[in-house]
Amino acid sequence: MGITGTKDKNYNLVWCVEACLSNALRMETYIQDAERDGDSEVADLFRKAQADSRKGAELGKHLLRTRLGE
Image 1: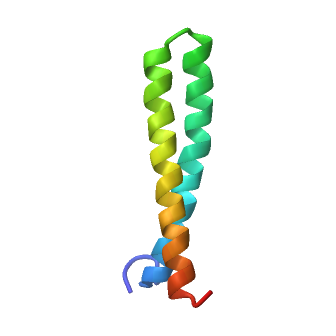
Image 2: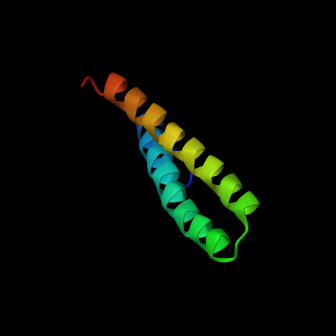
């Protein structure tokens, strides 16, 4: 069972979705910081990272629905 006592792929999927969503929120702060400083190149990078995080969350949610029988 490892260190946490939880060896469960569905739990890992839930964690992954949460991490992706948390990262998307964090990227919003970074985007605002870059825009405030007038750095559109960095802001664009953070927007792409945010989009990837959102995509990861959506893929994970879809997989969870499939696995949990919704």
